Length: 310
Image (tube, rainbow, N blue to C red; front, top):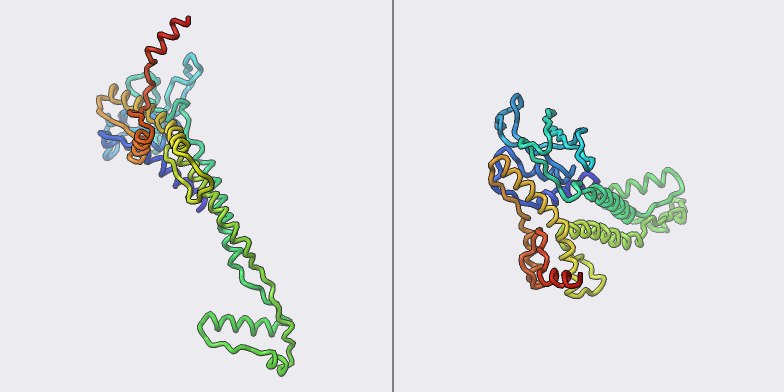
């Protein structure tokens, strides 16, 4: 596949990470996720006067790309949100206004940059595989003495391809025709060792995909077993792979909570089924329960010990 096709493959994976319920008809979850994943932020607001269209009346909720103006917060971030829709019109609000909600993808409000880098890597690997497959399909190159012999050979191959019987020419017939059979030589361009390289290149492609999926909560086992893994090692991979999805869920829940508060909706967002399955598997394998994105409260006994130490 090309870079563009691999990017679409990874985009589809990310667009399926979260499930939204009770969204207004005009607030589409695929666009919410598209802006969060691609840009790291999304602006949610009501369609203002002058920008209504069929199916999207004034006052209905919509989401758009978000950039920031020059009014700075004490931390140096722009507090003016400039929301630009895909058809070109824009609105401007202070980010603390009751008329807009700014959602972010993660604690750094960054897009998933590795979609682009991993898609580029996969595209390069696919190009390499295509080249290797092409090289292994090269047929022997036949050298001949003159143009007449070249035409005879090409006609013979053409007849074979079309299913027309072809006579086998013996060395004796060559001698009778006054032709030297030694003039017909083969240069074998096919490299069998290139076929071996295909499996390693294909394995690299599988590894890049597996690394990406595991990074975002889907622990994928490779088809080739390179080393023994203990149960603890596998569980460790599962727990670390849940860090990013749970962080992303935390900030989506904060966005949804603010939308509900400002616009009177009852939206719910959760991890999608495959990711919930990973959490359940982790809980069952480790004995831990209620894995969530919430920060646990300090253990009281630990706090008491700390006080005594002070």
